Image 1: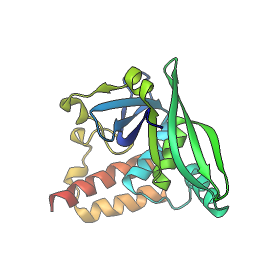
Image 2 (image 1 turned 30 degrees about the vertical axis):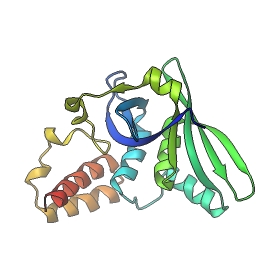
Image 3 (image 1 turned 120 degrees about the vertical axis):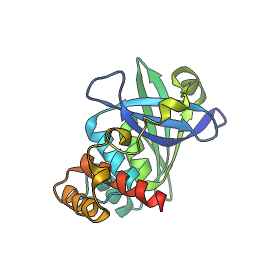
Image 4 (image 1 turned 180 degrees about the horizontal axis):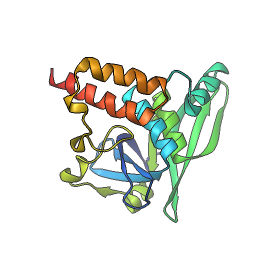
Length: 196
């Protein structure tokens, strides 16, 4: 379909629209426009875990879904955001079992969380990005983070921890299923790795 645009997940930030929610920021793969999708805490946490490459000790719902599908030879081909109505995005997931293609309606947050885990393509219809998309200023993009936590520049003492302390904190957070904290710690470790 030529009236679709390929997207990538830029990251997560706090929602400016809904208190206690997050905004999943999707970006044109080859363009300047961004689409913020308001999502709940659980979905933000699931997406953050995937973005940060954290493997929880027990599978969370989206991991379980992917394992179930793979177990039966079903793969997610793509996700397409096909409707935007009253501020709500609707998505369709396209599955393939080798003999037939199956289309399933889904909440956009769930579809993206699963697409990240399966490395599936994400698309949006052209008219939706024209209606709901906008171009971020560079200064706005520094507030987007690759996980379910506050922007790193606000900090919470992690920058003063040694690498060993961070790894211990990360293991503890994962064991306690405190994935928001684990994502913050992993981001600090990633920043340090990028400086080396």
